[in-house]
Image 1: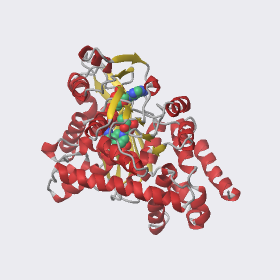
Image 2: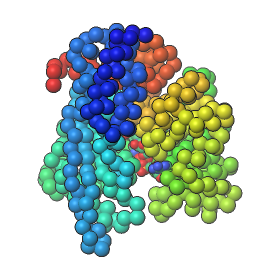
Image 3: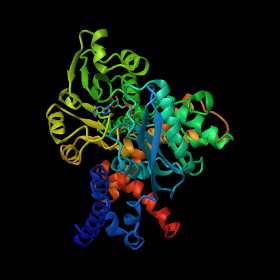
Image 4: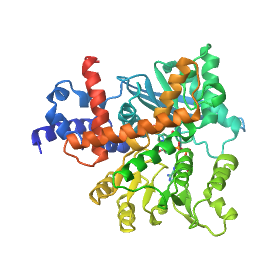
Length: 450
Ligand SMILES: NC(=O)C1=CN([C@@H]2O[C@H](COP(=O)(O)OP(=O)(O)OC[C@H]3O[C@@H](n4cnc5c(N)ncnc54)[C@H](O)[C@@H]3O)[C@@H](O)[C@H]2O)C=CC1
Ligand SMILES: O=C(O)CCC(=O)C(=O)O
């Protein structure tokens, strides 16, 4: 322990808290990251001289704007929009857009901060950004979604461009919303710039495999972790929280590889199907009908539905994949999972485990795939979509999927090596923080004081 370095890091953290009051999620993301930094700063005094930590925690830009729109009753509504352009050292700002009532500056900043290092880990030339709005898409008509999304883009477009800032989807933003945003961007800006957004429909510049990429990538990462102990997914009991984009394709790949997914959820509750979840039913409910996960038991009476958004962690499993939202898995849930025989966790969502839960899982020897690494497959394939748009060509699904597998294996390897080098053997939380950080920090030094 180097207490002088520890004091320095603590003082940077204190400044973050003072400058960003009442932003608990942002503080949490910085705290988790700083827990890995002590040996790195001790070994590389140049990072301190160049104030790398101080610059990294300060976004290059935070844009906040009014989003007025008209609902189906003719009533004017007002929401707040955000885009954080956190760090452009490695390339254009890159990161999703979230539409959810909980969206705030704190949520967008925690997501944007983590995105910097996640994107660096992919090895692609992309910086870190994130955006969103406190608009709640639940219960809105298609026309309301379109009017809101067009209004959102009418302001946001000023800050975007294929070489400047390239958004994509996140919670509440899928192919439909990306389509509306792309249409509005083109209408305002003219020309043809497909690379300004990713996650587009494959018929107009989207990449095959982007829809599946985050969920599939998470499973590829879990496979790497299991292989390090000579294990695989076959026959393993798996619990996946959420039932959105990431969850559905994590379930799909896990099942393809022989895993038995026994539970999934939405914000109201979870279903438990001892026979294994029937994914076609979940897809029908969530992707076609826009229903609740509780509808599942109408199709499969042998399954059980229980209310409560975090109760899903009471279901015993060997592999837990939190794929819904931040802080959905706390210390008590982690304790129960360990007592029930947990082997591995893959964070499909961003920051789904509280800091106490992460500490507990690591000290219990659970294989732990942190979000920055385990869910990087989505943004990695977004970068492949940008590359295809630049070249004006399209790769096959297999080509994209093979690249995704390679990228996830590289992230696993570089995180493991960085952990080893800095005295955090086997700790992929520290390893992914350090591997991502060093890429960004070295490039920041090379680019001068900006
Ligand atoms: N879509 C992508 O490519 C990527 C998404 N992520 C992260 O994955 C997570 C899920 O995102 P998507 O699947 O894209 O969103 P989505 O909107 O398709 O699905 C979100 C899911 O989370 C559930 N959910 C939301 N709030 C909840 C709560 N409080 N408690 C329990 N469940 C809740 C919803 O019911 C839904 O099933 C988010 O943390 C997102 O930031 C991370 C990397 C890429
Ligand atoms: O595909 C992207 O650009 C962003 C994905 C994302 O928002 C994330 O990795 O959390």
